[in-house]
Length: 168
Image 1: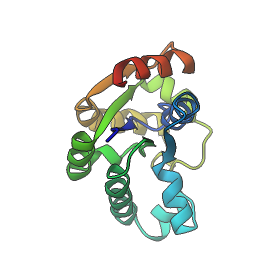
Image 2 (image 1 turned 135 degrees about the horizontal axis):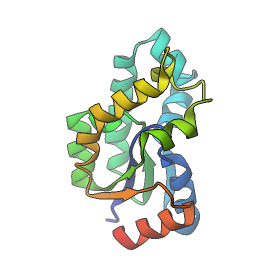
Image 3 (image 1 turned 120 degrees about the horizontal axis):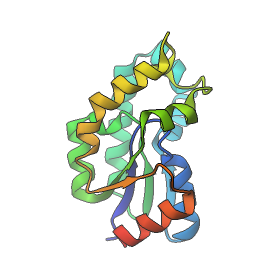
């Protein structure tokens, strides 16, 4: 069985971008963005799910999808920013997948996502402060990933090459 490659990290860390780029290089792998799967299943945006059904509902669906995907092979999975907070999800991924934390600074993350209105957790008065708070809360779990890649000041090619050298 070929272990799946899982990308975790904050919103704006580049999980989807790097995942797509990796899947073009690793032709035997299929890229899956967990957030997109949820949007397709629910027929509404993540912001709408949070608003109409709750974050707790979203996290439950997210965990179920990740558990299913972790049993498959040859996937590159981009997690939502909060997915790795769930202990059960983390344990399943750590057991069955190669988990990579795409680490970035708050400034870099904020610059990438500041104009994105589809970030429900950042629809507040001070989104940069909220992002900082979320990173502080989530990073202890992100750091449990098997691999950590500092992404600041690296381009997509550098990051994908580093991932391939680490996990294959």
